[in-house]
Length: 260
Length: 260
Image (cartoon, rainbow over all chains, first blue to last red):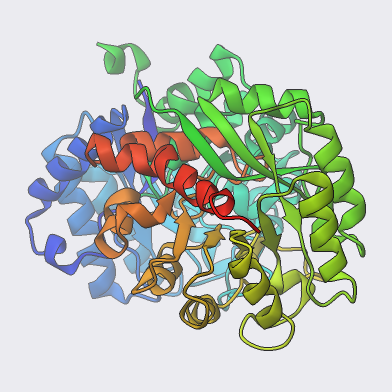
């Protein structure tokens, strides 16, 4: 059983996006299955600074794919924290009621910004989780883009909210150390090329319970991203946690039912 | 997949920002063999930053002499005043069959200055030129050491100026590979940094299979990622075999068929 916690619809393919959501879900699951991946979690078709209409469209597409195969396709509500608070809370509730599992935040607003607080409190109250983009960038950094120290600040402000920090490779060792003491933060293995040693380092510093497999498909190849887990020096238990059990816990899926 | 690989992109040594676990020639060779790699082209990572590449290179050639599966690669910096003597020493004294350059770390252009004479010399002696496009994701570099990738258009220009020079580009991105191989049969590219949904499909849409090589960029990247990327690609057995090892054998054979 392999769950990929960090995927997107095929946003780079305009022709593909003309297909109805169920067909997109079927195609994505077939591709994932070819790589031995059983389930995927969709973070939405991201584009920068969407307005309310854009947010609803992104999330409607994710909901459509989740509802096609709710046993194998999971999804998060994409939000822009710069939008009105009433809209944000309403959108969280609409998406969770429709079957999504949490919230995805990108770089519209930095994680230190107080505008995230209402989102974090609402998510905690609904016992969902937030997956937050993060990257220590030397170049190409977006305005307001969060790095792992920003995520650590967010985690300290909201210790009751479960946070999944994206992009292990992008945060590197420093990023792992930033979140080490914040036990409400886990990390996904996506980001950049599969640079060696970081999966083992994260397991050593955080424990294998806090590391989740993520590919960032379709930006990345399922195969190369799985390779960093399969090629890492891990025990079978650590690998099993990273590839499935931790994601199942995050998504609140009973693992035995997944294995059936 | 039962393919045997020739890995055209392997380093040995240390790198200031990474903790390589493969610290002896035997451990590196064993790791590569465990992944099905029957031959590896290995260069010295210290030669990237060390002022005189001959020093780490001599250690490299000596250390891997007992390992017939390894083709040690000579790093040349044509900005150095002794590069001609360095090349002669490596070829005549150490038996070097491949030369690698790092134009971005050693700070020169591929299309003017000393590169012209080096390219002419290598073409005349039928020695393939390996160009390392990058060793890291530029976004993740140490802030005080920002090193851009080698410009792909310069490689394309070099290939056009020197059509008899066999050029191997390593760690290029997908889009760069398309630029460099278009119309240039003398350019081969490894797959280590190409990473996208259906990597092999995207590569083969722009580049003939005869111009692609297996490369893992071990130990910077997990070896398994490149192995799985090639294994998962939806391509026929013959082009897969060519990419895995056949093309590399052809490139290397070209280096030795004609007398110097």
